[in-house]
Length: 88
Image 1 (cartoon, helix red, strand yellow):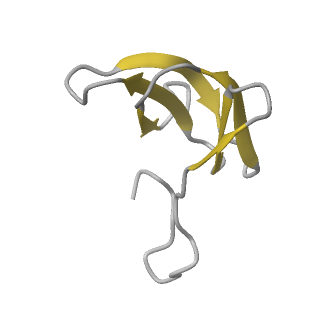
Image 2: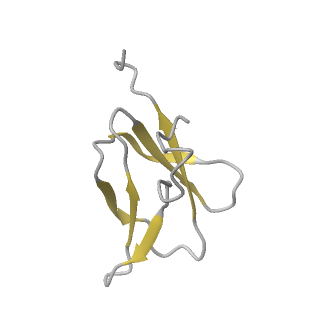
């Protein structure tokens, strides 16, 4: 339950949406939860993921990450969710 979604609400899901913008860059959006920290990782071959954006604080709103990699024929993203280290 680290994502903070409700196991009894089928509409409370973590869904990543990737949209290609007019300039060929990509924007990724996802709903955030308060008191969660997100790290977006990426790679091109599903072997070794590298952090693309780190320490993204959730606040309950949709988070948009713009200017993602362009020009790659295929790209994979993974979102890691943790509780902030200062969360007590």
